[in-house]
Image: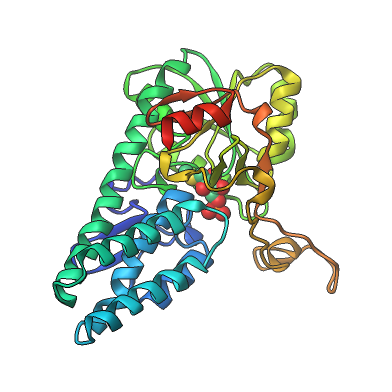
Length: 351
Ligand code: MRU
């Protein structure tokens, strides 16, 4: 196995002036950092999942906004602020489900508005600082989830995860994987089962790759094997990430997550969702109000370059589903593990 240094495998890198994304569509075969030259390229990279995962697209969007306004410093302050707002709306249109993107862009616009009256250069510097802050804060959020989730992991345990809620989906450590990385650091031996996650294989291409890189015992399974692994008694706990948690605790995450939650419920296995506060959307009352991204038919009718469905076939391709709150054992947040009643507890801790 080839070993990469941390810088090569970081999802988002900002060197003060230049922005790079690890192109996740090319993993696990190629590890390529691709420079992002303008906000159009950032929009495209988010849309095509070169950068993906809820926290990572929030960070990516914030830096994308910096790139989108930097050629407009000669404009009047009002024109510059209008550009900030229109670029934020544009970047936000790249993907609808993960709330982190709009959360980060709203923060950027608010920072620009607060800094106004001091000239475009001052607003621009403030925007750069805010993007870096969002990026740095995410590292703390991941560590917080890791520390609160760590006591759940016991020696010898089997943990199932779905999609990639790992370091690649965040600034570092991941959300669902944060407790796993900390447990591994402490020498606790456990096994991870990574669902491959059809149709885009984030579990196979990303989760099993990054955990293998870290030396964690990981077994890759196809999605339809989860029930069988549970029936064999190999799974003691499920931990997944999320793209948006509604105010009542309903959880949107990668398509297939709800099925895993139903299986866990059937087999009496705890089902945890790791979520930083940036993913909690108290403005959305319940999961049925979350916009679910519908992606192109080719992701279903082709497996890589090979056609696997007949030409002209009707296709559905929702990228996410919503797990009802009653199937969630707990939300692992940077402020602790939150349990039902979610409506009450989320409001008390996060509003
Ligand atoms: O379509 P993706 O790959 O962006 O979907 C990502 C997920 O569903 C993750 O589980 C979620 O963003 C949590 S990331 C820490």
